[in-house]
Image 1 (cartoon, rainbow, N blue to C red):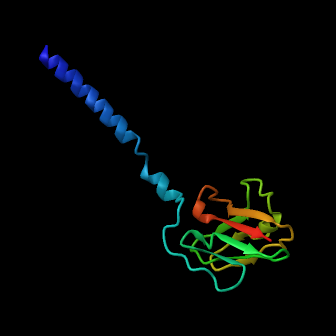
Image 2 (cartoon, rainbow, N blue to C red):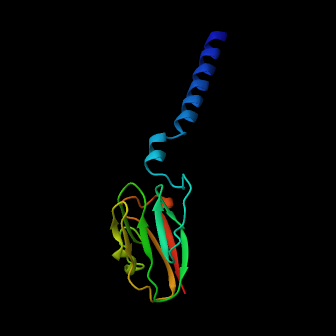
Amino acid sequence: MRHVITLVAGAAAATVLAAALSCGGSSATSTTSPTTPTASCTPSSSPNTFVIQNNQVCPQTMTVARGSQVTILNSDTQTHEMDSDPHPEHTDCPELNQIDFLNPGQSRQSGNLNTARKCGFHDHNNPSNTALKGTITIQ
């Protein structure tokens, strides 16, 4: 009888251990779509300019005057498609959609940001990556 109780207790412990290990998730998911900046980012010295480097937008927030344009410079090693929030409609600030595809080394300006509001943008091809999101406050 004692062996039966030990066997049942051992099986229960193995089940609990297996369940705990399975909750850890897969490391492949976190490496393909990071959600936080992973390396340092150097802001541009040019006014109203966001820089994409090390798979992140720098700075992630900016305040500009009404009528201004913003520039996004892709200093990263891969192409990015920067569009207005929300994904996939891109309707909050259509002026940002003029930026769109950026090859490495390429930059583009938005349209004139004439309405006072807060605009978010993201990489259309990686919309859940918070490191590739930014916010512009238009005053």
